[in-house]
Image (cartoon, rainbow, N blue to C red; front, side, top):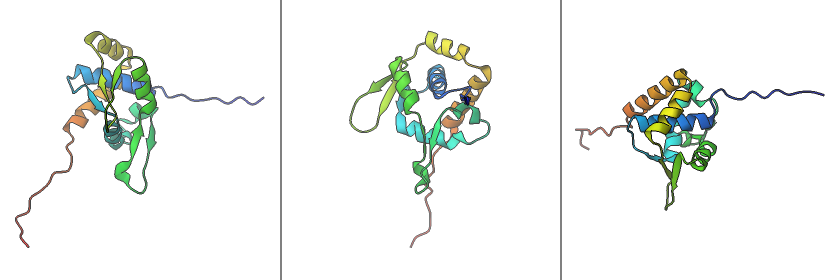
Amino acid sequence: MIKESVKYPKFSEVDFIRLYCAMNFKNGLSPLIIHHELEKKLYEFHSLPKFRELFQGICPKKDYINPENSYLDLRPAINTAQLFGLLIPIHGVGEIRSIVSCDENIAQEIISSADKEMVDKMSELLNTMQNVQGPKLVKSNLRN
């Protein structure tokens, strides 16, 4: 009989979304999460060495034809967070969204149960995401 050993990540996708929601609440950020927008934004950070451990349980979806459409697949984690009431889905037309349903006690419990190194990395990730701005439109004084 051949036994296979399965290696599970130390920090799963559910661990990621739980800590993300808790830190999002603690930092006073908007409780509204637009799922695909978050997945696309996080994709930019998943391959950076300093954040790699945070994303070890999340599957990247790379679009080779249109790289700007690449994203991290958070659906299983988001569905789990919704199932346990950490995220409340908002039903409407268009984008799939949720609201972080967290209070001080829940956020503190999640943060204190997480590894300190992961909490520090998530804090740095949230700060970096807040400071990164999209492309800026530059006006030109040249006329045709």
